[in-house]
Every structure is written in structure tokens, then in C-alpha cells.
Image (cartoon, rainbow, N blue to C red; front, side, top):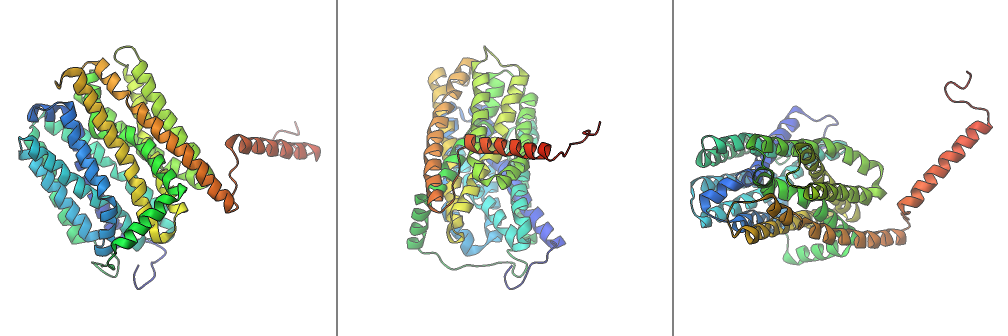
Length: 459
């Protein structure tokens, strides 16, 4: 808070500001993922193949990723309120254009607008939290913001999908645009950058400083470890939810829309449930964060391997396992931001966070585009898919897994070397586990040797 000290207990107004900002982020996630549930409808409306359709989402992600650092600078300069409202209006304009256009050019511009507005929202919402809540509350509220925000995917998977199946394309996207305008107006009326000021402004940032911060952040192996962790944990779930999950489940696996929507909703719910658990594990075992990252990657790769190796259509329980595994990717990718926080000074934390955030979206857009190109090559651009087409296309994800895994292992080694130079030695996991077992045996020996018995020892 500027000019004062925050109370130990958050005020009602603080909770109201957070709730409105959270609603803006939920709306942003709904806008972001809307094309995923409309994929097959979009192919019919715009008469395009899978590759062209994928390019819509790829361009949206490129805009989002490319604007992360510039938006961070704008945020420092102009504050959260102006960026949240502007982002909401820009996304609503994109959805209104998507509702009315019948040409590919209009659809591409619509997704560019959605990506640009989306890029302004999440980090602006996160910036509000430390201005309104005491420091001890900030980590929990940051996790909750990311987790609850994913209910936007549920809204796109269920109500939006129902509107597409019922009233149709124009009504669905115009309704989404109108809701976005309403939320932006509520944010304009209710938000304040700080308890002291409705609008805040910062100093101008020079290009030289930006370049220096970027270079210093990237040179640290801890930042690169965060980048590759985010890159490898996030992409499978994002590509599934944002673009190819709905077509894969319906056209590939033969599910109906209702079942596919339910599975996408389950994807979100698993992420919301797993997030707090992963957060607690990261807090308790900060030197074993990479083990959690590798575990999430193994679960994702293993689940896809099971589905792709299954003869013909996979049974519903197997698809449920796939969706649950992919749901771990979002919470797992948040570990990348923890690397940025712990390996960088506060003066360049925003820059390092932006660098890490780019990783997952670069991997996601590569996956989305490659899957689309392979599907087009298999079907000649027609939206008539066999399960074998999807199996071959989805297998390209293992290339992304391999690249990301190599980046993680290399930079983990470099980061641990840097820590060792600073006096922090991270023992290999097998050694740490062996020491733990050895200490447990010694403790048990001491207890037995002194005649102390456990419960039931007198019987």
C-alpha cells in the first residue's frame, strides 16, 4: 500500500476488489478457450482445414506470449485498473468480430484481439493482490487467483458449448462479448489500484534497462530452469483445452458433445484440486521442485502413451485418466514461476516471470500448429478424421516433451552448480532418501535401546 500500512486482517473492500478482478480473469480464460469448443463449428463456418484452424489459436498465443514483457512495462507505468478494463474491452471486441465475420481474415483479427486483451489481464490481477492484502496472504491468494480463474474453461466447455449446439455461432459469441463488456464496466466502477489511489502511475522505463533486465534474467540458469519447466509441463494441457481436446474427443474418440464437455470440465476441476497440494509440496520441499516437475511430465507422457497405444477408441475410463493427468499440467507449470521468484532479485522479478511465462505458450503454439499440419496432411484438409489420424498427430507431443526435458535436466545441473558455489548443496534424491532412512533406523534403535515402547508396548 502506498503511503500507509495494510491492516493485518483484509478489509471487506479488499475482498471486493479481488473478487471483481478475479471475475475479469475468469472472463479472460473463457475468451481464451472459446475457440477450443468451437473448433469443428469453425471449420464449417470458415471452410478451413485443421492447419488453418490451428493457426488461429497459434496466432492468439503468439500475441499473448509476445506481449508479456511489454504489458509488464505498461503495468508498471499505468497500473492494474486501466489494463484490466482495456484488456476486457479488447477481448470483447474480438469476440464480437468472431460472432459476425464469415471470412478467415476477420477470424484471424478476432483471435489477435483476444490474445492481446488476455495478455493484459492475469499479471494485472496478480499485481493488485500485494497492494490490498498483507504479505502473509499473498502466496495463497496468488494460487487461488490462478486456480479459480480456470473456471473460465468450465464456462467455455459447458454453457458456451450448449449455446453453439443450440442457438448457434452468432448468438454464442455475441453473448460472450456482451458478458465481457459487462465485466469490464464492473471493473471500471469497482477497482482501485491501491487503497490510497484509484489510479496509480509509475516511472517511465528505458529500453536500455529493459534489455539489461532481460539479459540478466536469461543468463541465470534458475530462470532458464523455470522457463523449461513451464515449457514442458503446460503445453499438453493447454493444447488440449485450447484447441484439440474437443475435436479429439468428438471426431477422434466418437464421444458426444455433452460427454466431451464434461471431460473438459473435469480437466479444470483436477487442476483446481491439485494446485493447493502442489503448492504445499513446493513450500515444504523447495530443493525438490524439479522432482515434482519431472513427475508431472511423466504422468502426462504416460497417460498419452496409454491412450495412443490403445487399439481403436480408448474406453471412457482411460480418457478420464488422460484428462486427469493433463489437469496436473497447469499447477505443475506454476513451479516455473517459483524458480523465477527464488533465483532473481525483486528488481527484475517481473521480467523473469514474463520470461518463464513465455515458455509454456511457445510450446503450446508449436504443438497446436504441428498437430493441425499433420491432420491436414493425413486428410487433405478435410474435417473428416479417423482415430488413426489423431493418434499420429498427437504423438508429435513427444518431440516437445523431449526438447523440454533436455532443457530441464541441463539447467537443473547448472542451477545446482550455482547453488553449490553459494554454499547450498543439493544432494541427489537417492542419497537424500538413503539418509532419511538411515536416520529413521538410528532413531528407532535409540528408542529400543532406552526401553521406550510405542503404543501397545505394555501388552
